[in-house]
Length: 170
View 1 (cartoon, rainbow, N blue to C red):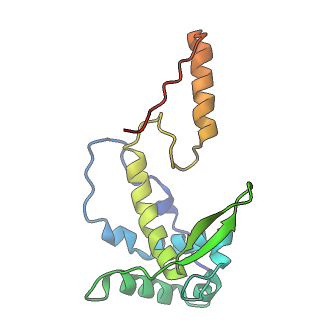
View 2: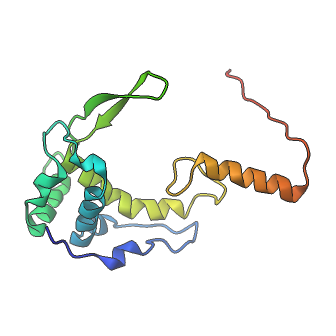
């Protein structure tokens, strides 16, 4: 499906001001450019080939025209009296390196698409609020980045001792 790229949606939504309030975001979330960008982002993810509880994959959405995809997302989100209600997720246990397993929740593809639409609008706004020293669960940041930052700061401060204070449970 040849979806046109929405270049203006790839720019930051925020102004960088921490006190900025955003209102009326739903038109941006449900814009055809944002929906089609969400489709492209999900299609590039290998998990998009895994079906959720509805047995559909991104390939099934790809068979629809861009207009039909946009109309269906808009209907799911705001076209019903009860509002948007995600479908149940499919639970699958995936193996861990130590031999045990961990549960993985696989949402249906339409829910993934809708969640991606919201993420693309809300993530830049929220990212502007976070400290530059925050590394947890953020795009392009990891525990390795946090350790490297601490290591660099230690070398620049000429600190020879580090005290690791643990937190006990109450």
